[in-house]
Image (tube, rainbow, N blue to C red; front, side, top):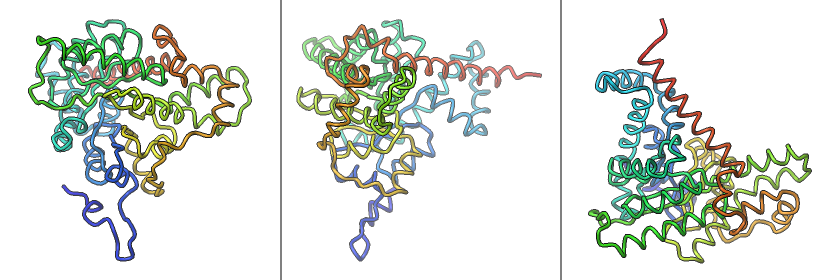
Length: 376
């Protein structure tokens, strides 16, 4: 389906009627991905808002199943019958796979049109493997084979970054997740370059029969960095202009993007974990990806937030200086050398988010259990 906004963008008086996100997607290098694999939301995001990518994980699968029980409850029962020895976790992940494959199909046109740079469905590895490099790599290889445009999410912990390098060497397209800081993003970018260099040097590496770009992206969950700094401010009784705390994630995203460009990384930065519209609007114009949840896209367009090129507009130096002076964790997150890889695992946002992902896995297990072993 072709967007009506794309075919009739201008009224007789010269007014551009395209939604803000579509203008940014069509007029700048900035790519829009939908932070959900829900087929109804994704179809609208693609056809009306300009999305050329999407993501799926246990949190999203859990939400999709809860929001569409008429479809998914019978399907889970069918899966239980098809796989009579499968437990709750295995059945839940089969639902994640089905959602991902369906979303990947919707994105195939964008994948083909971009040569693999976009049109990607991000599929997250099981967070319960976060301590097992081999398991992360093997699951990444498996997920990569589910559809030609799958891109696999691995957490940006020390071990996870090692797994990303090995996975990309084995032919997997990567999206770093559980990532909040510039040093994490740069460490991932470097690891992906090493993996790609190993592929090029090693004639025995897995082939790329599609001859498409890997399309690797490196997420910074800007809003989750903001969340963590707000926890620190409350915990340590720090008094700072509360508005400044809305800029920390934006500052980290801008810094990471410009660092990637300066260093010539083949991967792009991806903005996720939305808490304010600036995590989209302040990045427009950059050759990067923004991945807001569907409702954020609706609200950005409803409020006609301008799709102005602001990627090169720096965050107010006064805000940066205040965040540095008051909150040491901001400098750790903002400076390229703010943390060493062994520190990533215990950074506050990492711990909080990884625990939430693990909890979502447990909730998905419980939902499947209630379907296949209902209470009397």
